[in-house]
Image (cartoon, rainbow, N blue to C red; front, side):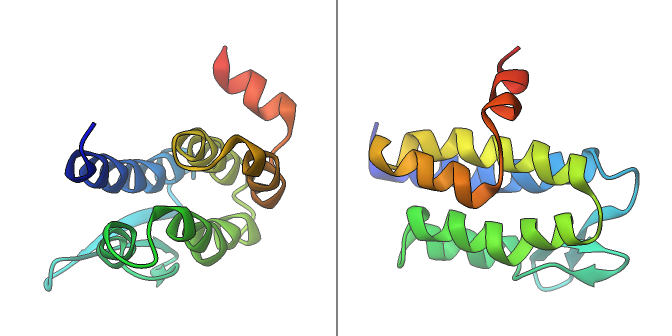
Length: 128
């Protein structure tokens, strides 16, 4: 698969991670589209992290997707968990881990799972 195709696919995956979090948030999270073509995941009208477009731009350029997925976890998903949206967090984190299996070397996947705070049971439940 060529590099441009991968870039587009991972950008769509990042948007999907945000949509998964919204879906499982019982209405507390939303995607907010601003006039200047910026999309933010918000909780109670407070943006969580940077715009999705900025993460996608950084993923497609420097520092690259391996760093950007971790940044997105720290900037956005940890805040989702902090707001008490544990199901939203878990569903989005498991999907982020699934994407990580395509990006990270197998020796780094355990560290990614640890950083995402997901268990083997979480991964097994998702695969059913």
